[in-house]
Length: 228
Image: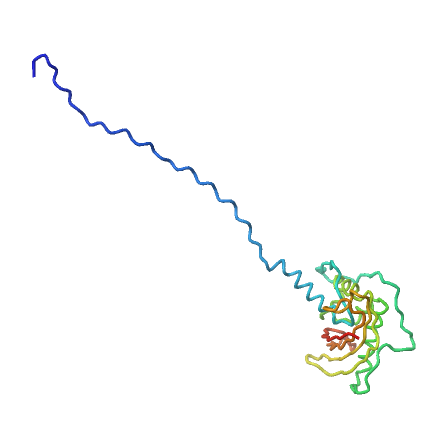
């Protein structure tokens, strides 16, 4: 090295420039999930409707519900007055219900009187009289206006006849089993379930009766039907 030459500069390590830092973008929040609705609750009105339809069908004639049934009241209420069509009155001298001679139960006349009131009231659209022969703990509660209004709609064109008490026997729990046959006529569209356009129907109904202060009341009914 010559005296006039500057000594070489020391080389220091210099870090390479950093690569660009990649910062991920924030992910978009997922759309809110649709609330899960139980399929059970919406089905309840259908179950209630079907149950009410079956109940209406066996209580003495075509008993179809209307399109909108009033909601059941939370407390027992007085049976509402149902606007009636022109009543079909029975001749006071002619009984609507007869007793088969094979029925030997001594209570047969009391049971026949119950059904005389029940079927005559249906023919005359007297639903207060119908309510008086129903057991509040039975299938059709006379103290629930919604049920009685549905029953009234279902029997609005019905006329029952040829009512015969065929059998009367003791049943369990102190109740009585009564077998009744009858014929109903009704307008097309008011026939029994599955045959709505039927205008004449023959019924065989097993009524389960309870006893209240010595009086029979209708608690439950099971029916089979056939066209006239």
